[in-house]
Structures are given as structure tokens and as C-alpha cells.
Image (tube, rainbow, N blue to C red; front, side):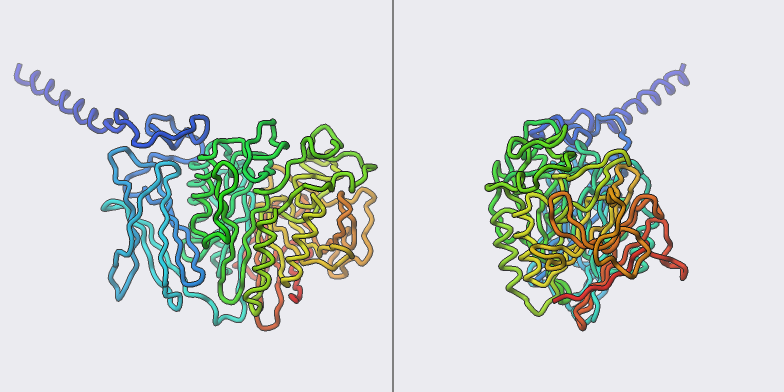
Length: 541
């Protein structure tokens, strides 16, 4: 009888312990998100949700600090702490510490936002003359440690790795990229957009991105800017923040709840330098266009999509979709109409001001996509488009205004989005009178490939003599924009055209060298070779 009673007591104790362990499931979330159709895995009672294929959100409590991401510009440090979802009874406080004389010193505390699980540290009068170890701490056991680098102003050459389009068709880690980038040791890393392809589950996908790439930005500054897939859309024409109501959003605007859009931008861009003009656009959506000063290089960071006009109902439709032109006989002038916007007056004003300041610095423009139609074939070889209105080749007047300001500043342009690496000398009024542009390849190019493949298969005038690529030289794109194609990576190439860019800015001789590395090449090996056509060195005026 005594043994029976002992067994019953043991069972009751076990049940009691299990009940205690499961207690968070009975709690009420302290914050209820204002949307219920997106980010369902990481908001409200997230702990009651089933496991998801993106990433395990139910990590050990010693691992809840996922990563930190930072920039330093004008002696101001901005560092975002990204956490995994927290249980209702866990602290929403996160702490930033730095190492001084071998000891850790707490310098700031911040509150974590339950919608997106990030917090921002902003430290003015930062000493950027030395390397400083930092760590982000939550509770007693969770932390993330890294290095805030000193300003590399004494270096003759400043280098930047540039990546884009992190497709969810491959959810694996990115070991090749991490190894290569850390070996090449750039001063800055730039992610041009589509860090997330999971549309309605940005938090889980953003955490996955951090798991894949945090070893590249743990110890160096990073710029991340969201593109269309990050905010849950296949294409984005932001139209100053309006609500989009048409499938595919060609009417312009944002499809999902403004708080979801703001969460995405908060997680991805809060660590950037303060915006040039922080005035929100419609419906309270913020802006982040700004510039970053690093080592004698002045980077302008643009928002390609936020102000751009949507095509539906504004121009004559030339195909089954409002944004795809399949009629090669159409008049390009018929779609370049008054009132259409690309960057918008606010960003043009910013570019004008930016180009007239810090004139001794090398100037670089960073954005999501290229300012021309740099692809002929989309998705599969049977899908030839005469023009794609998702590209920034349209509207042409807005494109030319932007390029004129970039050229006036003596800047080069670095972008992503197209899944097709290209180097193009832009033309505004004449071939070659605009800036150089390097669109970097997709991180994973198994999802939606593009090809540069002129229909007549003829080289343009003034072809590039330094490559065996067949279709280089002067061309008109589908909008009659003048472009000079110098190099391109079609998906038949190594790594299916997937890879990344590395750009070296030589301050002494005022040049930029564009490198383009395939995904599966090991740059630590002496036999490592770039894509055909690269490297390309250009002069900066």
C-alpha cells in the first residue's frame, strides 16, 4: 500500500512539474498585434503555434538574443538587437555592454518591441578611433557578442560586399558566403533587399537570415534595406504609402497592415544613420533614406520603391499584366507620362544635397534595383518581355533625373533585385554620359532566373573588348533608355548565376573595382575565378 501511495505521489509531482513547465501557454500576451493575417508564427500566443519550416522559434532561453547589427556614422553608433520571441513573463529589457580595460561595462538599456522582437541602441559621441568589443544581454544567460570596428579612414582602399535575393527555395545555411566574405574581410556589408522571401512571416524569416549571415556582420557594419518580398509583395510600387487593393499591387501601395510594414522596416533599417528627412509618408509609414560615412566613402542609401508610381490605370496596358510590356511595337513615350514618379521629389532633393557635400569623399549610391531594363527573359527562356515596369528603367523621366544627380555627384551605383548580375554604363542623353552601375547577383538563383539575351543575338556598338561574352556594347532597353552593357551573368553560368559582389573603392586614384564571385567558389583557394567579364575597374569623376 505504501509503495502504491508513493507511486501516486510521484505521478502527481510529475504532472505538477509538467503543468508548471507548460504555464506560459496559459498566459495572455502582453501585446496583441493589430494584424492577424501576417507574422502569425511570432506574435500574440506564438508559443501555442506548431513548429514552422522556416526556423525554430522555441529556442533555449540562453539563445534568445539572435544577433546584433550596426552602423557607425558621424560618431553615432546605432545598433539593433534582434531577439527570438519572448514568453509573457520574461523581461522586455535588453542591455548593451562594451569592453573597457578588460571589463564589461553596461552603457544602455532599451525596451524590446513585442511586434518584431527588436530594440535599438543609439549612442552619440562614439569613439570611432578604436575597435570596441560589444555584447547584447538579456536576462542572466542570453548574450550576443561582436566587434564595433574603428573607422577605416587611414586605409587607401575601402571594400564592401554586396548581396541580394536570399530565396527560401534553399533554407540551408550560407557557409560558402560566410567563409568567402570573412576571408576577403570587407569594411562594410550591404544587403540590397529580399532578405526574406516568406512574405507573411517576416520575423521568422528575418531570424533565419540572421542565423545564415550573422557571422558576416557580427564584427563589421552592415546596411540592410527591405525590398518587395520583405514586406510581403511580389512587386512594390509604394506610391507614397497608399493602400494597394489590386492583386499583385500594380495599382501602387502596400498590401499589408501598416504596422507590419513598419515592423519590417524597424527590424531591417533602424540601425541605419538617421533619415535625411524623417517625415512619414501616407498612413504613418516611415522612411529611412539617408547617407553613411565610412572611411572617406559617402554612401547614399535610397528607397527605390516607396515613392514610385504603380502602372495600373496610369499608362496604356501592353500585355496580360499591367507591369509587363509584350508589344515590341509600342511607343516608349506613351508610358512616360506627366505625374509619374520614381524616387520622388524628397529623394531627389536629398541626392542634390548629398552630391554637394563631402565632395572630397568617394560617392556611392545604394538601392534595391537597377535604373534600366537590364534583362530580356524572365523566369524561363520562353518568357521574353519587351519591358518590365518593376525595374527602375521606368518611368524614364524619373530615371533620368535620378541618374543625372548620381552622375553629377561622381558616384557609382550598387544594387540587387534582378537575379542577374550586370555592369552597365548608363546613358541619359547619349550613350555613356551617365554613371556606372553594378547590379549584384542573387544569393540563391534557383527561384526566378533572368537572362540578358538580345532577340537578334547581335553585339552592340562599342562592345567590351575585355570579355568573351557575346552581347556587350551599346543597346536601347525596352524603354528606349541608352545603356552600355559591359558584363552579365546568365543562369547557365557557374552556381546558376548565384553569388555576390565585392567592390573596392580606391581613394588615392579615385577608382571602383567591381568583383563578382560565384556562390560555390572558394576564394581561399588560389585557383578561385570570378564570373566571366569581371573584375572591372572604373574611374570616378
